[in-house]
Length: 293
Image 1 (cartoon, rainbow, N blue to C red):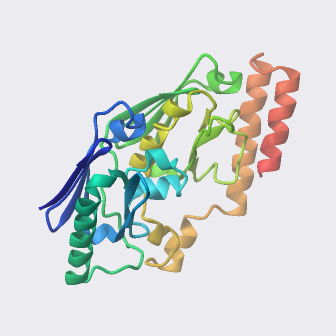
Image 2: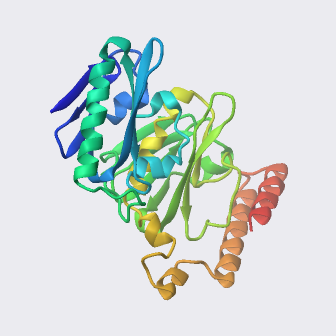
């Protein structure tokens, strides 16, 4: 077995699986500590590099496109410090790091692992149930449905609609953008009905507006990945491995758009009549809905 133990964590390779275990040191980001151990089958790996530097080097594991629901959900937008596939290596352990990298490269060559995109997720993603408290509310996922409980600081429109419960079968995709600390992020659950209704995250009852602690809001990526792992693989959604009639049935028709628009406007009208929305809030939200369609 090839293994390297560092403050950031431990990487071990037994010939078929790369096992990454985060370290317990306080310098290890909360995201990596919360995600826990990751078992990566060799068939999900496209390559590995060791990048030596003056004081510390880095091991970087590269995965095949479409193999990991976490990378799929985050779209390469995870901060580098939270990247679970990177390991800081002390200079006196550079020889061990190069040995681990060489062992993995040799196994990739011997097993003739393809480099093209994977046709299915090869990693399981974060375990469920998973629940994260963010700046806009608490989002939970049990493997079958997503539940959002709004915070007291959430927009009045969101709080007025009550907890949002979304079945996996109703979802088309998950959109995630991290809270950078300088710019707000969001976690949006896109359903067949809302695919063309792009309200601002702070007004969208299907989205969490991430504006508070960047460190804690980053954990919403775990929910995004867990949900993504249970949605159709991108190769299917793009129609590469399904016939066109099946693909077309997943695309909302023009009449569907019209029905959704009327339903959203009717909901806003009811909130306005009930006094939940002021005249100004109703006008602004209505305009945002119309722009989205």
